[in-house]
Length: 149
Image (cartoon, rainbow, N blue to C red; front, side, top):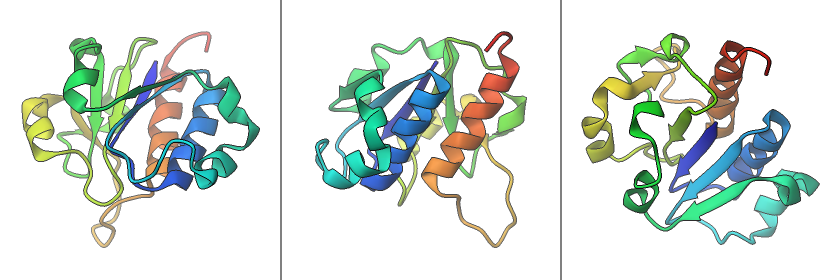
């Protein structure tokens, strides 16, 4: 299983997600450009000493990353998704894709994979959840569905 962050902007979120991936035993993929440099001290501080255990890959663009993805196993997360995240049927091969904090995934990507978009329910007054919280919610639902995790 992989968590993919497309153009993350806040190093502390990415650090927390890296730590979460280590704890869950899944890989992290970061797709650039990022809003920080990958050796940012805030990124490392949020990830604590877990960063050295992280299975991590960086791609400069989404197009380069998608060439390595099994597209039948992708799940894209956005507040405007077509499906509630609990309806996803996750496996050890799942690729969980999240967009940047300020604006989410690019509209072109969402349109291309419209039927593979998912959302986390929330009250109408809320625009979105924190990226690290969103990843945690979805990741642990995916892991819950996998036997013998």
